[in-house]
Every structure is written in structure tokens, then in C-alpha cells.
Length: 108
View 1: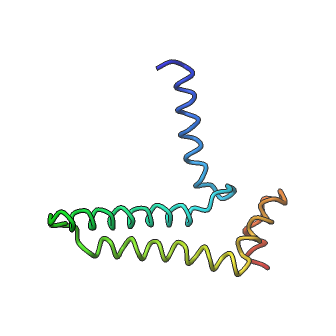
View 2: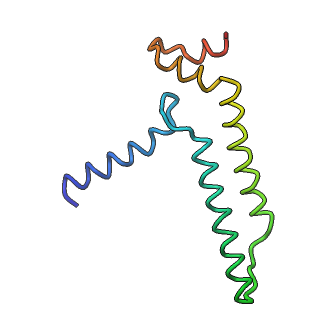
View 3: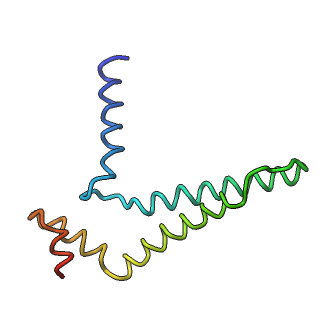
């Protein structure tokens, strides 16, 4: 691979790890919930397709239920943060530049 391709790949890798920082613009809970919901949809479509073709679908139901709990937990926590105002407080404290946003959030 050439230099341009390597810098492009390295930039994408760095950007992928940016979502794990405290001061990013991505909501990790929503990302996880969306991925879990997508897996539930894939499971449903496969189950429907194999049922129509009379092929047994050998995937345990507790796997599907775990995706349900992950989705509900992710979107539920995100929804509670949205309506309680803690997410807005986090964003406001990140923008003030004093680096003490979490302490201010805890102290009120």
C-alpha cells in the first residue's frame, strides 16, 4: 500500500477510537442500541425466511432476548439522560474549556 492509502487507513482507525473519548460528539449508547436493533431485524428476517422455506432456524431465543435487553437499555438510558437534562449539562461543561466538566456535573 502506498503512503496516501496508509494515512487514510490510519486516519480512519484514529477516528474510530475517537468515540471512546469523553469529549466526543457521538452518543455511544445510541450507537450500541442501533447495532443491537439491526441485529434484531436481521434475526427476524432470517427467522421469517427460514420459516417460509420450512428450514429449521437453530438459534437460541435467549440470544434474541439479549439483543432486546441491550436495545431497551441503550435507548432507555439515552432517553432518560435526554429528559433529565444531564446530557445537556455534559455538553455545556465540555464547551467551557476548564477541563473540570465532570466535577461540575457532580457538584451541581
